[in-house]
Image (tube, rainbow, N blue to C red; front, side, top):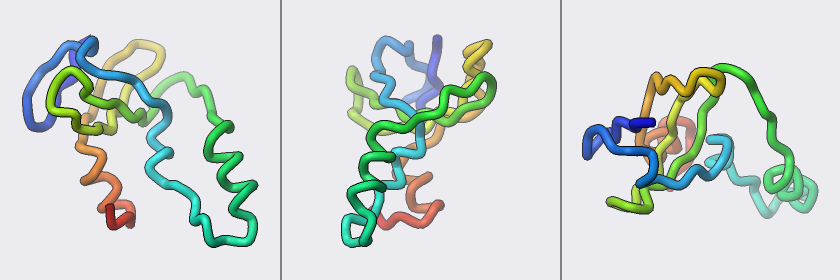
Length: 95
């Protein structure tokens, strides 16, 4: 599978490490009253969709960047690759 890195161009997926659902960008606020439950859900509850899915990938064998890859889990077709920092900023996280 080829991942078209936004900065470096096409790269083989063997350079990357899959880290799970892209919702991991949205860490719970540890100061909330139900933070323990939120962190438990954050750490352990995941959906397993068939079809379009946003995933977090780490470019371990390259520039060590984090990417959000939109991929069809049934065909492995990648439709979008973005830097995770850009996605996080766009979705309201400062870092």
